[in-house]
Image (cartoon, rainbow, N blue to C red; front, side, top):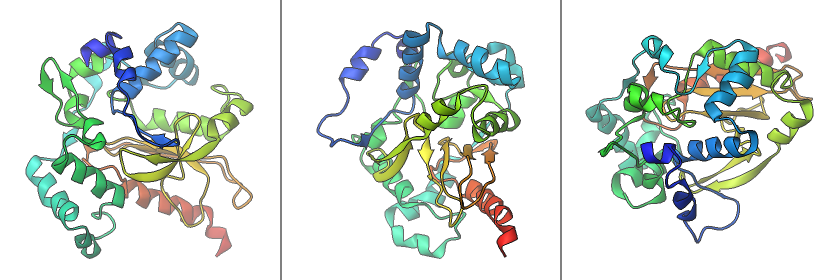
Length: 287
């Protein structure tokens, strides 16, 4: 990770992209995708992504969002991860016997892509899914998202796709700006271009998803009535969604969820519950 963060060997990583996949296939690595984003910003703008975020997003909006800022380390809370035994107890039965999910509550039940991913992670270490989270730092394998979040070495590397530091209030402020049209971060035309989407087969999760031009997931959390939502979801449980409104509902909505507990799952049951409550409020007048 440290060598790649300093751009040593990043070009070789790009050249080693998996081959043989059809067009409209999405594949990525949990860490290097952020490094490529940083390299792209450096080439286009000249600044690092960390500097760009500080000067173009956090500064103008007066929010707390940092990449690699050691001065805020003393304020970073310790994230709690799921012990290995609890991981196996909660997830392994669903991965090995998917029909077992029928007896679980929606909060405990894994999605199909959860089952796919964790099956590959546990039983197929050479798969693209397993390789997408394989990483080493100072010769040691990284074992979980909470370990990275709790380690100042990782936070100091300003990894764009992991170990950023913010809080729910700041993230909600950014989502609210996007829901209200983008200004001052984006022009209306720029936001519309960023929100154009298409369907891609996610080779890491083994299922099709809609992705926008900007890389946001589009309607990743299927809701009965509240459609046209864009945003992203952290592997540990955080989520951000915003909605520009539509003819079905004129309300512009931003919702953010940032937990201290980093659960090793890709679906976001708690966020879905909150999103469902928001949907019921939006359409309450129709009843």
